[in-house]
Image (cartoon, rainbow over all chains, first blue to last red):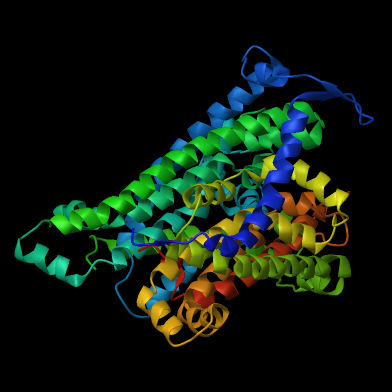
Length: 300
Length: 268
C-alpha cells in the first residue's frame, strides 16, 4: 500500500530464492523429464510424450482408475475433516479460560499433538485403537461394538478421521484464539449496552474478527489433509484393500514401490497443479481481504 | 473475552480427548511386554524402566535422536537466516515480481512431500550429500523457508517504518541497522518462526526417511525396527514414541506466551 518501489530489494530476497529454487525447481525439472518417458530399468529411457497424462486422466485404465479413486477419497477426507475441525476449533477457542495459569496450561496441552512426529501420531493411534492392547479398541469391543480398523473399512475411516481431528483441531483452535484475543473489550461493552444476545455477539463481533485467521486455518488444513501420507500409512497402510489410500500414498507406492518413474512423475505434476490452483484461489481471496479492510474502516 | 455456556466442560473434555492417547503411550512405555500383551491394565502394575534403558544404552537407538536434532537445528538456522532479509524486503519494498515471488514461495510450502521424495533422492545422491544431515536439512527448507518468510513478514510489518527512517538518519548502515535495531525488535517473531521451523522439520518423516540410510537416519524411522521375528516389541516402541514427544513439549513450554500469535503467523 505505502511501500516504496526499490529494485535493490531483490538482493535481500536472493538467498531465499536460491535456497528454494535449489530444492524446488531442480527436482521439478527431473519430474517433468521423467513424466514424458518410459523406462524398463538399466537407465534406458524411451520417449512417451503425453502418454502417461492421457492414461492418468482416463478412468478406464489401471493408472487412471487408481489416481481418480484416490483423488475422490482424498477430497472426501479433506471435506469431512474440515467440516469437523473448523466448528470444533471455534468452539474450543471460545471455551478457553480467560486468565490465570490455566490459560498457559491449556495452550501447552493444545499445542502438544502438533509437535509429535507424524509417524508417532500414527503409532499412538495404531496402539490406542487395537482391540487387544489399545484402550479405545478394547473398550469399544467390550461395549459390544465389533471395532477393528484393520479389517473393517468403516472403522479404518473413522480411526483416520478421529486421528486427524485429534492431531489438528488444536491448530484451528489456536488460530481462532489468537483472533479472539485481538478484539478490544470495548466491543463487548458496546454489545452489552445494546443488549445483544450471545449469538449476535458471535456473528457480529467474533466471527468477522476471526475471518482472516480462519482463512489461514482452512488453507493450512485443506493443504495438509490433501497431501496427508504418514499418519494413515502407519495406521492402516492404505487398507483394508485400497479404502484409505490417499493420493500421496498412491504416489509413493508407484514411485518408490514399483519404481514406475514415468507414471509417478505424471501423477506428481497433476497433483502439484491441483494444489497450485487451490493455493492461488486462497492467495487471491486472502490478499483481497487484506486490501479491503482499510477501505472499510475509512468509510466507518 | 466473551465465552460460551459450559465452556469449562467443553475444554476439560477436549483436553482429556487430547491427552488420553498420549497417556496410553506413556503407560505402555513403562510396562513389560508380558504385561502389555497378557492383561489390560490402566496403569503399569509392574513398572519397569527397561524399555528406556535399552534406548539410552544402544547406540543404534540413541544416535537416531542425535541425527534428528542435528538436521532440525541446521534447517532452523538456515531457514531463519535466509528468511530474515527477505521478510524485510517483502514488508517494506515493492519490486519487480514481488507478488509472484511471494506466491511461488507459498506454493512450495504446500507442495506434497511425496512428489519430491524421488527427485530429492536423485539430486542429493548426485551431489554426494545423500545420507547426511545436510540433505535432510536442505530438503526441509522447501517448506520451512517459505513459512519463515511468511511469519517474519508479519512481524516486520508490525514495526513502524519511522524506526527504519530514524535509524538511517542517525547514520546507521543497513547491516548495522538490521542487526542492532530490527532483530532485537522482532526477537519474539524470530522465536516463533524458529519454533515453527523446528516443529515442521521435527515431525516430517517421508523426506527424512527417503534421504537417509544409516549415518543420518532419524529416530522416527528407526522406530519401525521394533518389528522383529518374535513379534512387535510394543514397550520399546512406546518408549521411543514418548521420547520423540519430549523435545516438542520442551519447545512449546518456552514459547507458550507467543504460541497463539505465532500460529496466526503474526497476522492478527
